[in-house]
Amino acid sequence: MSQVNVYINGRNYDIACDDGEEDRVQKLGQYVADKFSELVAQVGQVGDSRLLVMTALLIADELSDTYAKLEGNGAGSDSPADADQATDAEGIAILVKRIEDIAAGLERG
Image (cartoon, one colour):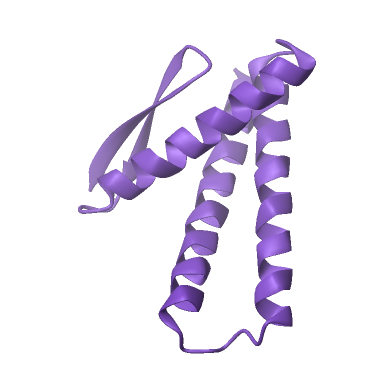
């Protein structure tokens, strides 16, 4: 098991991942950080917990749209592009769950 440090809104988060997945998790973390920054620019600093939940919802919305597009374009196709999109969508879903867990921990703590 490995760990990746993800930097979001001035804070570091140590995220566990499988060996060999460090680059992927780092890229996903950067994607989340970028979405988070976009939200801060739009709504300001309204609290880490709220912003993390809002970011998770935005990414979940993107994921939902991606699933709908895949289903509409004949999901189940064996093309490499479809496989990459499905893998990316699964990775984002896992990251959304982790963000929700972090946000829940921040609200409790």
